[in-house]
Length: 571
Image: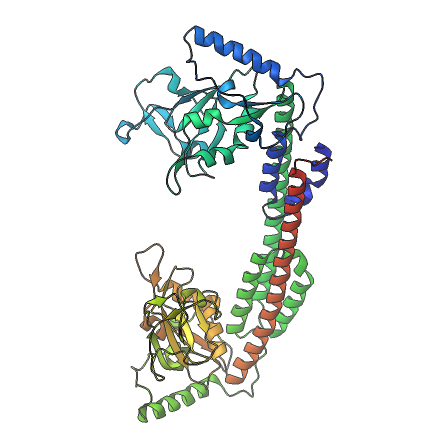
């Protein structure tokens, strides 16, 4: 493998999502396969250093300093996962090192002061706190700076792995091996890379239940690893360090660029949100569109733009006001009159009178012709809680919504389950087209999320974790929905959620009824909805384009890395 090839493509590959992590893995993958640096025929073959290691181990066994292990068979061809260059050898781990397991401690052994105890969490995170032990232990349990360690128990993918200890002299806890090698024959940094590139084999040999596994000392020691000449080990380590430092710089540079871009994006969005009227909004939007490709580079950049659009919509700044529009106060009077008629005819119940929205409840001023009202004033029915019967695994005529059917603020008909229930046609649980659904229980990020149901009647019911409101047809249901999912609507409902659970909180019907809504004239509601739909469609296209670009970039980087990693690849 040519180092120049990697250098020429590093920056491109590093820009892909997850590219830096993928390249770090690739560097180590190539390193232990002899493809990262060229071989030198003048290097002493690894077989010679293996003979010296064997001779030294025999001497230490004879002197009683180490134990003689059981003779191990040579590494067979069926155990070799890939070919290594000439001058390299496959060896079993036991042939080149001695393993010393850490000391077992009970929680009652821990003290507030003394010598720190190195646990797996301290290997994975140098900022993790230490436990201490204030008594001496056998010298073999002490670990000194620069020693090679291997965590052999825990969660595969997070806990297993080799580390060079960079901390102070400490006591090693159980579940971690001290990997003792002769540094005059083996570069411990190369050995660390080789062990970490063999994690898949270790994990496949590990025992234990779901999530927590461990590999026995015998299984660990019998595992083959590739061993290059010592001089090449040093060259490999130097090259790995060089390329990892380059990746650090590329990652830092990308982080700085993203920070600068996000600051510029947020500034542009702030200018848009702070526009005083529809004309200023239009001008700010044109400036934003001109810089769209520079400011919006990833799908996750788009949601803040959506929120800015909704905030402008409910503050009366997205479209121009028309003095000829019937004011919202007259609309409220017509709704009240319609409510009184339906109550008199026995079609709906008369609810308790709602107090006017107080000045202390108003998060912002609204234009002339608008009014602040409560959601309950706009509802002909509800809010009412749903029903959660037992679901079944076979198809039936009745579907119930999952909570995820409305989590994104739009109705998703694919997020449903079947129930085996015989509901009458006039059941209160059937959803009707245009019903407003509000999540009454979820995490704080999603509690109160609203969506409009759009679909057939007598097909879907809604669960107990949702409430349903039916809005008078005199009002734009789409506008009311957008008011609820706008930043001010979300803030109101989230702030009033209650519950002690860290994962689920709740809002009640009184909170929903009292929710304050900035209500424009009906004609302006319709203009707002049309403009919001237009801009949200633009956001959809932008998000889709960015997602496609990310997917293509990721696929290209993955294909390049896969190609480079192939056994027969040659630069």
